[in-house]
Image (cartoon, rainbow, N blue to C red; front, side, top):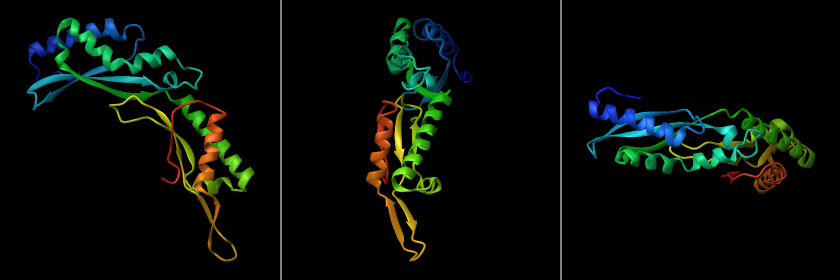
Length: 202
């Protein structure tokens, strides 16, 4: 917590708010967080921003660590904290929740496995070599948003696969954007269920 340049009254409110939020909000899950003080010139006052560490593998519903209660808790955190602050009548100092993400090893492994399966299918169905798929920037990406949001998704990224004809030197399309996209959907639907954004050739 940034405490310098704060009045003694503000310092005391921060201490009290941390005790209350610990007991009423974070106590059950023992989730690491920090309170950072920000000064608003427009409001001419200090306010508290809550920086919360998000366990990605615990949040993501296709990992072995997934915890639906944890997911529900995190999704409602921006309501729980100001409600707790109302008990000590300092809800006006609430400045929102910001998120830091950690522990995503299993989630990233799933994305890598999906990408490798995609390369195999591209080779089996279209005779595309793995390095040609890599050069087209085709892969599955687990998107973690900017720090003021809690919304994760799987993104389909990549372009159509184009190679040069060895004889003519002209570019030849081996796989179109729609074919890449369709194949990625097929792989995800048979593997995991999650929010998706298709950004192939966008």
